[in-house]
Image (tube, rainbow, N blue to C red; front, side, top):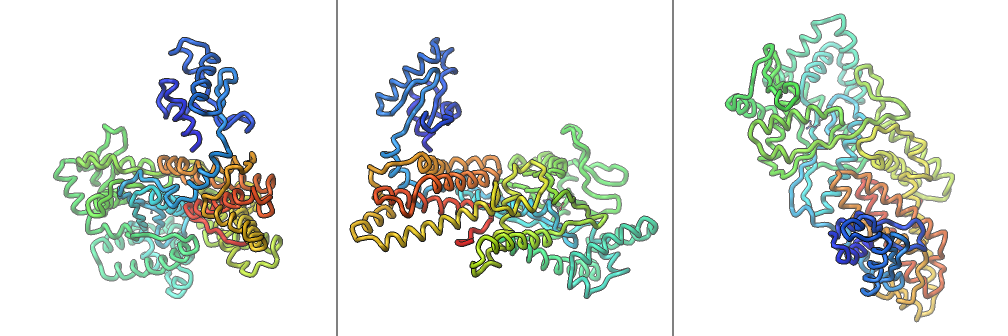
Length: 575
Ligand code: ARG
């Protein structure tokens, strides 16, 4: 916020655009040097002067405009008037419209997220898609877009033929009802083990899927059973993660919508035969052909995604289509978008794959085939158990320790995921993620709880004060009573500046589809608060300083709580 203010003053003195100046502005390494430093090197050529001489001129210009600026070699250092600005800035932070952007203007963004495969464990990749997608939903919402969350369940395809074939041979309803995913996984693993020596299994599986696509009653009944029991288990997970969807429309939903797409491809002359299968060649795009209909006449993943995209554009009226799916599906989406473009759909340019890196838990990877799987539920349970242990040590008198542990443990996993740049591979360590120190979710949550306790003390202090002072504090709480004489320390000033920068971080997070921008921001805010908390007294500050510091603390609490909310992390009031 203040950088923008500085840029606004400097730009007219340089002939540069405000945005260029903003990019050039630096934060001085020490607070004594000022709030912003403008390096003059870039102007030397156009102005045919030495940078130091330019710095002197700019500093003069800024002083004439009433700013405190000094030339320091080739830099212009600007000091903002803390005492004058702080009440204005605090007031701005307290305004309900603060931090709401209007960059989306009612644009409908369909976010494909989570999208696990039925009858398989909820993989870590799906966890990432779920939490990144849920965060993007809230970020877009905050910026004036109309985001729509769609869970594109993997509930169709050859694997269901396998599932049915295996169930027919070895299935057990009771086990499936009790532990659907584990039992399905066992069937799946057994299928692959036995299929190595028994090729009839694969034939049976293909036959079952063909029957399913053609609407065979028994196939449909078995399939619906798998979907139902799996969904129950997924829903439990979504509940723990506090994730909702606007639509759950699995791949099966497009079964009766693929015919039209295939027909369109045919009439547009895009379908070609290849080894008995039908494909769209993408040589011009430098990609392998996109498979549309397999040799046995069944459809495949890309076919369903084509029908899905058309539906999202035509029926859901999406202006923008985001796919939060692991980086390993990059080629798939490039192919699908290229085929859409070949079909003449100009809106294929509005489709975007939002990939993310691989995540391992304590070095363990997901491998469904071999049955070596990290179950999300177990990971969450372990995180919660660790959180409970720490909470019991830190605060043995907390009454709702179990609920807090759930919020902290689950939050640690979500935050531990989201704080990484989306594209990075992550080796997730539970111990680090659940730690109350370092750049973790629990650290931020703990800071939030600390703030609440400080605010509680401040309220008690107000109660104990005489009326005159009480009124002064009330004024401060309504944000306009912070007196201009308030002495603003380095730590509170740094915190205040960071809080006013929030809209810029929000915008950056959306532009990059990168929730980690907000995760890192909220860590910075928590750290800045803790520095302030250690450097300056708050609840027991001298009466002239107290209103400012208490209000600053309140604004910090709101910002932390809201940032955690954007990330899908709970903020317990006490820990
Ligand atoms: N179910 C798929 C998988 O687990 C992910 C689906 C992603 N979304 C999509 N529209 N293809 O690999």
